[in-house]
Image (cartoon, rainbow, N blue to C red; front, side, top):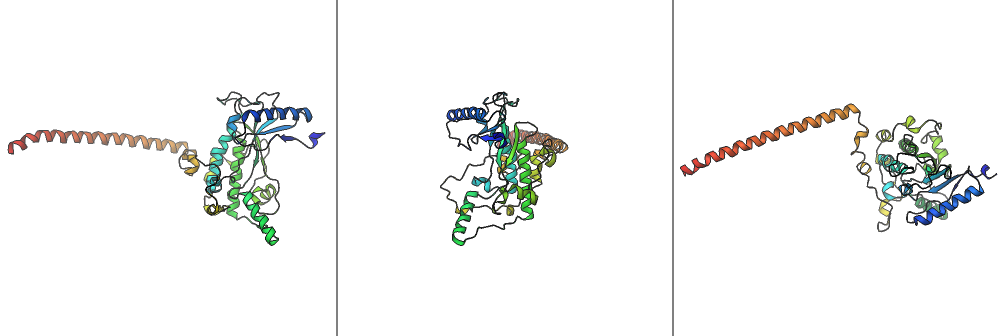
Length: 332
């Protein structure tokens, strides 16, 4: 019985966004048919969103019978683009609250583009995510292998995290758990941390077991308990995070990068770029918002009165000037 071994099957890992949509969709349809025929309907089938979930939100695989137990997969890492590795601690979490959360919500619905009726067929799943924030793994891996070749030892085998770094990673992990569940809406079926265990300590932020043991990954809650109920909203987590840039150790050093080559996508989210200063209403209490509204209205009333008085005084000066002109001419 293959179900004793294979509980889920990914048809294609991370096809690039420039793949021809029609070809990719035909491949997915053919792959689903093969998996269902060979393994059966109980096996989960995962397909990649090609890093653009919204492009699949057009009724694709929403039939509750044909497409049950299917999942649109995404891998929201922060370390594979330079702008992400350069984030401050809060910006990492802000990016989760803004961009990553929107991405989870971009699919899948039966009534797109209204997006009010959750798909009864395919649903979202975050098939890979980690606590990594500032190190490009391919570059560090190359450095480690080169060091082994030249010195016979691996770099960072005994690497330790500071207490403040662990606190930051804990907040980063909790924010992702909240975002990737999206409990209030229900588009997501869950998330899978990548990876279970790493060799050595150079890539600690990818090591689930170490994170649990050291406390910067929380224990997995009961399936009936949502992360937002345990940790608060994603925005709550932002404002309890130490934003010291000393907690970030970017690798490779940006000064060593070839800036004539593509260094990943850019970030244009105002909330992230301005470090949360634009939409601070997420943190305001209703009373605070009401008081600020009153202050603004009173300021507008005061401004209008001052402007009206200024116009009246200007009118008086014009009248006096017109009256005094003939006198000036007589005495001239």
